[in-house]
Structures are given as C-alpha cells and as structure tokens.
Amino acid sequence: MMSTISMKLALLTVLTGAVGCSFYARSPEDYRDEVQKLLDTKAGDIKACYDAGLKGKPDLQGKVTVALTVEAETGKLKDVKVDPAGTTAPAELQTCVTSAISGLALAPPDKRDGQAIWIYEFSAKPAG
Image 1 (tube, one colour):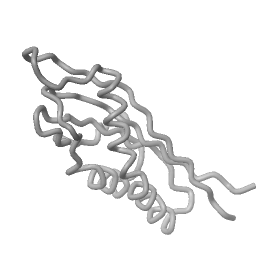
Image 2 (cartoon, helix red, strand yellow; image 1 turned 90 degrees about the horizontal axis):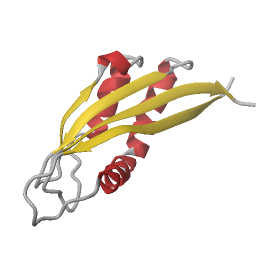
Image 3 (spheres, helix red, strand yellow; image 1 turned 30 degrees about the vertical axis):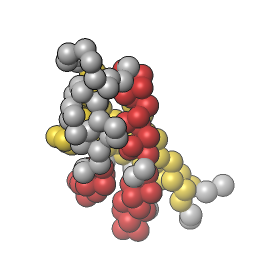
Image 4 (cartoon, rainbow, N blue to C red; image 1 turned 120 degrees about the horizontal axis):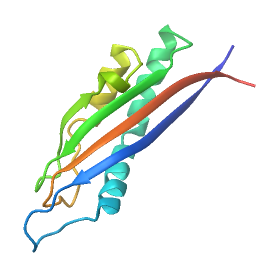
C-alpha cells in the first residue's frame, strides 16, 4: 500500500507589542504573513522529516505544535519549543521540525517581538 502525505501548517496567533514610534513595524497581519513565508522556506526540510519517519512507520501521523518568538531588531526565531499539550507526533518528528526552523531570521527585522504558535499536521493516507 502506497502512502501519500498531507502536511498542514496553520497559524494560530501572532501577538506583537509596540515599542516607541519611529521604526520599521509590521501590522499584526503583515507580521503573520512574513513569518509564514519564512517558515515556508523550510517546508521541504519538514517534509523530509516526515518522509524519513514514514520509512520506519508507514502509518505515522500526528501534530507538532511549535511556539516561538521573533526577536525584536534581529528578526531571529528564538525560544522555538514544542508545546506538549498540542502535540501528538513522536519525539523524533518533534525534534526534526524544531531543528528545521531554528536559526531562521525575519528580514528586515521588526522593532517589536512577535510571538506565534504554528501547528504542523502530518497524516499518512492510502493512495487511491
């Protein structure tokens, strides 16, 4: 039986706090969209994590919920952590997802911290 992969990335929330008044600052919607584009650059790496897991377990599925902060002024993703309450995928997949997105940076950076939660959902579906 052949498996296909359905991977979904959903933004739950992006919160920003204003600091000062003369600097580059995104609206909450722009912040969300730019972080989404940044994370999308790692979609291939995250799919590779899942594909590797499927080799050992063809029915592998679950969610990896990731919380992160976009650091003010540098744009670097920091405090990239799995939220255990919203995560059902095995530890190997959790580690692979967080490793794939760690080290990314939003450019240009914003003068405000951004906090976000993303959900990566993985499911193996029989072909046909």
